[in-house]
Amino acid sequence: MNSDNPALHPESLPQHIAIIMDGNGRWAKKRSLNRIRGHREGTESVRDIVRACREIGIKVLTLYAFSTENWNRPPQEVAALMKLLKTFLKSESPEMMENGICLNAIGDIERFPDDVLDVLHEVTETTRKNQGMILNLALSYGGRHEIVRAAQHIARDVEDGRLQPERITEELFSSYLYTHGMPDPDLLIRTSGEMRISNFLLWQIAYTEISVTETLWPEFRREELILILRDYQKRERRFGLTGDQIRKGSRRP
Ligand code: IPE
Ligand code: IPE
Ligand code: MG
Image (cartoon, rainbow, N blue to C red; front, side, top):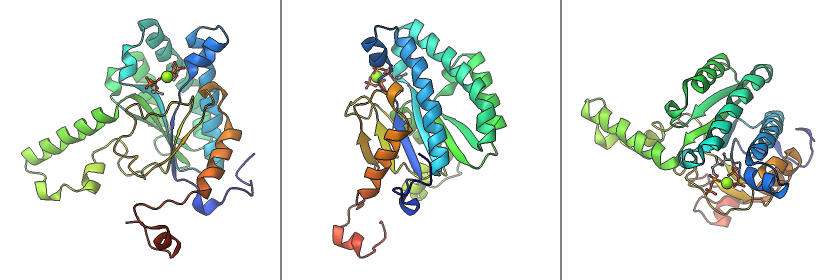
């Protein structure tokens, strides 16, 4: 399946898709494998979904890869995830260049070990000018942390006289977040069936459409993404208005 699929309407595609990639551990457990094997298989899904989104014409894809809370997992698992991330970034960099993908890390990445940070900075720098699609990798990311960090930066700007408190609006606040300059996610997908947000993009998902699938992340591939996109295109996004207002063409507030 590709972007020519007649069932997808190009005019109502989400501009920004965010995904909580969950279920790697359970995928491995079901097969009596080590959890790390689940994470490794999960990177195959990442590859497939990044390619698919690029082909479909999605402008921004944000993948939740590692949360601030995930630092509390067993040290061997954290170490294996670091290694996997490094390998993944190195191996995907040429394809990102070929496909015009701009990699952008969001999160408290300074907590990562130097060797991972080096690769991350290198790939971010190499792909910086690519215009095809932004791939946000949420790494050491927490929504509450992001909001507190924005508040700290705003407070500092007020303190230094660069900003008047009256100028603090929703738009200005958004510009202090990691996702500044990007549209909010239109669609949030969570795999593995959990009905929770787990500290992901708390500010940005105010009006995001949510889709939860039982599929475990290592089994989530483009065919299912297309089904979710078809379902998304059937939804009526009302942004607080009435259905009649939306059908008569009122703009979103
Ligand atoms: C998601 O899979 C990957 C990360 C959080 C790093 P999990 O590792 O959370 O898998 P489950 O939820 O235990 O199955
Ligand atoms: C959310 O998954 C974080 C990522 C996918 C990186 P978790 O597995 O950490 O979430 P909880 O613990 O089930 O809420
Ligand atoms: Mg999980």
